[in-house]
Image (cartoon, rainbow, N blue to C red; front, side):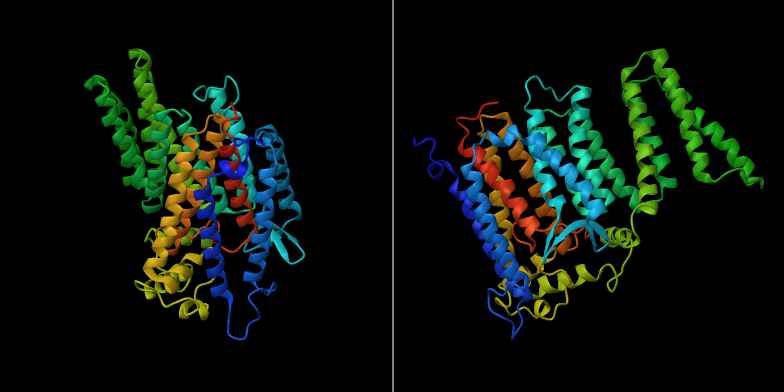
Length: 474
């Protein structure tokens, strides 16, 4: 075996150290969150910390298997593994067990298996295989549809379960597409839609729609469309609205005010389209398309919030945005989490000495809210250490991704980075009240075999690819 082929020499040991630090510290906090006086031994496999220890051992076995495999195994079988993932996500809808309102789990003996955790990994593999295919150009429409389909297929199946948190993680792959040449104007449009999403939750759409319309008129003028044409577009919208409002004020309730606004905007758009055809102004076409997309998005978000989400999911979003205050209801978890973290102070209460933890004030304290255990028992120092470990891992993974000689390895690396950033940011953010509680674990840290195994595979497949970067070419 040559030096180049020796996995022990080529593996990035700094990243391995970060993984060990996170999983060990995570296990310590799972132990602390579940151990009580009079409980069994450290290796009590009936307890969560005992089960997590088993998953740690299984993770090590999987790491060894990954290093024994040829690095070309992963691009070669990427589509097959993705296909198996889709089948598994379909199967869980039929044969899975419903837990916490979501049919996301297979239960085997005393262990639970969540396919959606592994789906992110195999989606990243399939996306990397597609984007690294010979002759693939992301900027054409067909390529965008193919890439989008790979991302959306598992996301939609997970949404049906329904598991809103896991589904939203798939939006992270937009960063992978951007790194590989996704058009900047579409990224700008995506950012605008995110802003509109938040505004739609905060403001009634009867007020949002005219604002979109007014902004569009200003942008039209900025693109040097003649002022006379802009005034025509404005008048085309105001005239029907004025007539309808006049009849309504006269006691003839023809329709609601939202319908009046939509008719007004539709009339403006129609007139703007006529002018665009006459002036042959491509920018005007783009503005009209952007306005239509924005309006449809606002309407669809409003419909989804009121007709698709469950009541507790809506309330979690409203509580996070400050629209509602419910410290004893859906806001209870976050409220207690902030109390626990705040009570830790600078240096914490000490390992196994967290009162909020021991008295179980925070539900799911060893899973989604594991970070508040860190904050209470290890204080600001411990919480900062966890954040630093994750930031170091993310920065290191970016460096490793950029040094890859294989397109597949680089794209897959960024897939992992994107998912890791979203999980880390949202999980920590929801424990301190910055994000809605959407139920996604802290990678390598939270209790759960599916999460630990999936993220460990995610990471060490990339480290395997990185160790063979000199042999792996496109």
